[in-house]
Length: 202
Image (cartoon, rainbow, N blue to C red; front, side, top):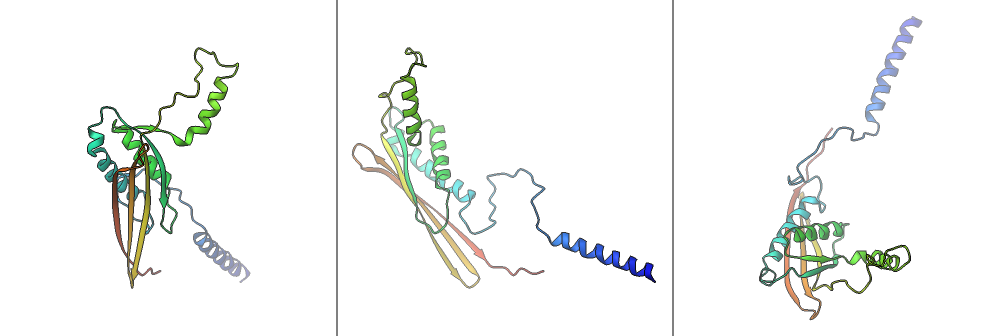
């Protein structure tokens, strides 16, 4: 009788232990590469598909701008402030970096890097010191001034009625002439996504 109770106790312990392990925290341990161009909507937030769609359309619009197409040499552009006016966190820098990279690849633009100014100033100071050969030292005062500044806004609107939810994003970019402060090009691109609530059962 004692042996049967012992076996029964061990069996129950095994079952409860297995259930405890299966109900514990899970980790993503198996994965694989996926096509970044494939649309995958796991939630209703701004995602990489939205970023790619919007950046591609804005880059296409800007590169087809008549003044850019007729320019004798690529204008020098600087990325300014693109404001996030939505209620959610959006990686604005990733969006502007993607747009800047595509514009550089088009070979129709040159870019001045605003974010590297402090590092450049530090290098000029080092070049002026005793450790760098004066023949190869780079001095301040020869940087090329930007012709244009890219600015913009990201806006959103959410409508939710019953089980339906519509999420709308609009990204507006402007190309400001630095000499005249005139907006010479402006365009906006929109993304609208529809979601429907589904019951989750066990």
